[in-house]
Image (cartoon, rainbow, N blue to C red):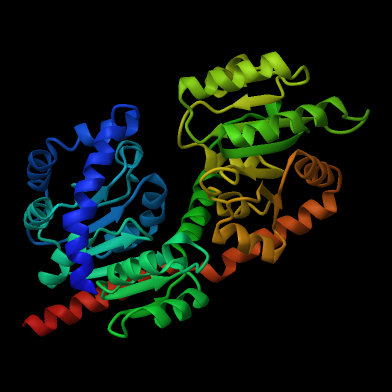
Length: 443
């Protein structure tokens, strides 16, 4: 089956994929940017690699986009402490490539690059240039030719934060399930977030693949970010005051269609003596088109909402809706929240519900595109899936008026973090053991 998929992938899938992304590049700036910026990939990479310490081993850590990069950070920060590696952080998405920031305390040589499109010539050139000792993949974005090349060269392959969801398209149908099995069978070791994921993957994959439970670095990263954000102030006390705060993270138009009328109604029906509600909304894509659309909708349809952009916050005049117009602030903003709403539930899938959960606050989200993390929050009682405006209004109003229930739900949401302490140490130890073992064998 592996040979069949390899031929199908290179003869059929890749040519179609290349045609499709080039077609959509005419209409999508993000796709077009990703194609254009890869044109000088290898020339830029060759120059950047000259900064590496030749006495260190090279490691590639591949992240699809910015979210996966944030999950990777605890791992390469832990590996950085060994003083043994040069790091290449590769990205598929322009948003990850451009917005990824390295902490100033990283001592090891580190560069970032696009991952080239997965043709065999590209993959051969990429791996030959870097000559990695190991490659770590974060959760997904797994490319068949790249994995095949790594295996043929005997390069250690590790997948972390792996999950298994039989309801997902990737595993539900025979063809997609067969392909996913083929791809995952290329790994030496797969590290899962939960024991259930390990059990299910062991049923599907080759016994040659070692599967371990290490936890989720995403949760560990949130804990670290919470600590580092304690001394960072984005909103001063005069803005928040004694108001109740709703933070909306990674919202799409479909979320705003539900949220804005509900927030407007709550502000309209506020009883005398009740604390006012201030809403902080961070769109998933805070470009000018999105921001203007929200502002115009509020102006035309909602009399009880007054909006200000975060970039103009110094001009704050008691507005009750702050529109975040920059990237990278959301995780810190959650520390101000009494309640969070996470977008994507009526579109492509809910975004990171664990970021607000880490702050011990109740989390609301749409019920059509539930992720495993969202389902986990529902199971623990720390999150609620809402189906429409009425459901959102009822749940949001209940949490705003019942402090005891807010505290109970918040404690439940935060409880999921207790099992993810020391995840990056486990993964670092796992990688080092395998690299050292290979080194002993080669000697």
